[in-house]
Length: 166
Image (cartoon, rainbow, N blue to C red):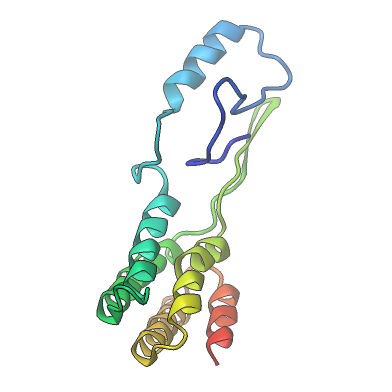
């Protein structure tokens, strides 16, 4: 199946249904009303797309041609707020059962979203002291909030990313 925001080619299946529904036409119509297909990703139902856009801004700001670490550190703070909001929510189930049917949906994990947000910035900003100080601060704050508020998001990916900064 296709994940939210993923690319699919024209006329390729985006889901499989088994066993076949008794009323295939009604089932297809209901499914078509439940999904949106477009030429590009949007942030309305695709949180990863918004994260990618913010991360790209930070990475561009760190490029030698732009050399704007202040913008990169500002983006790190905004991404920290996004990560905290994600950590306030438990991981979404990839399966949903109803009667004899099971819906299986690929979903990004907390760890995958954290990696998508910060790893490129760490890679391109590792030589900039200001960027790395802010990265440590934001990841430390996220970790602190996970512990202090007993947030449902996992602490291990945060600890693993902090360890890469040492």
